[in-house]
Length: 347
Image (cartoon, rainbow, N blue to C red; front, side, top):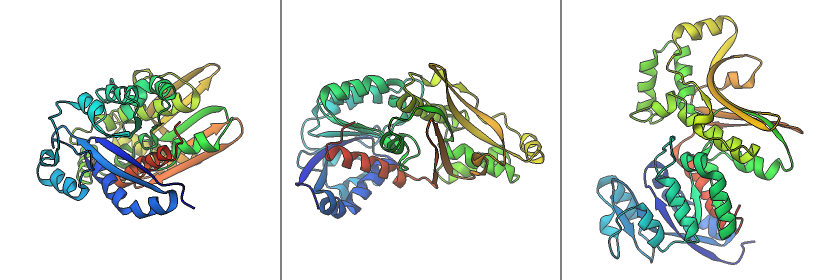
């Protein structure tokens, strides 16, 4: 049975592929959210770096917003005084919740970290799919959210819509995490898969760009930054660490050659960009590096645009795999966080 009806206004920081997928998902799931949970959402603000800004306290027309984002700017939908930057937007937008979907900055998490901090100080709930602020400010943001009794969720930062963090947080209660191992970047996994099939590194990168899996500048993926940031989030949230991306022993896949892959194959092994966080007494150490894995290792069989994590605790070893991640699956992780906050499950 639905709980008493509750409506929440949300504002979007960023309106790229994931933001647009989120809006479409909100439209598609509106009836289900209303019928199953008595919930409804309206988007009262969107700010972007390249497509303008729109605020409307009565709720934006989402169909028009999607059209504007594809062909022009959002400015024609704006009602009220101009908004100069993201921090001003966060403080002024008439919203109960800020959904942050800005580009990744693995070195500092900015400017998204400042925006999330400002949202919590203003008494707003926050949901983010951005790995940077979590890797650089998780403990601070969590403390502030508790103090403000505000929601703070971030499921989509690791493996998109797969319930990775929620699985560990909700189902592995009072477990001690001794090790987390995984393949956390589908782009590099796809590149290595294609190279093992005889495709040159540069051509494999171009293929990933054409498929929308890699950015124009793929450095965050192939140099291991994306994987390192995700690993830091897992280590800090689930293992109680206080790491930053620069603390990770990080090596990307630029140096992997066809000869390396062939040699590994002759030995019955498969090279994968392995992410690993291990507890050693009171210290958590983290690494991201290409590793030849034997066929007995389940991660050696993860191919193409697939991510996988293995949790090793004192009571259970458990794995979860996400196949063919997409902006829609990431948006789904964001939507679930929004629903949980609306259900007053804040932390």
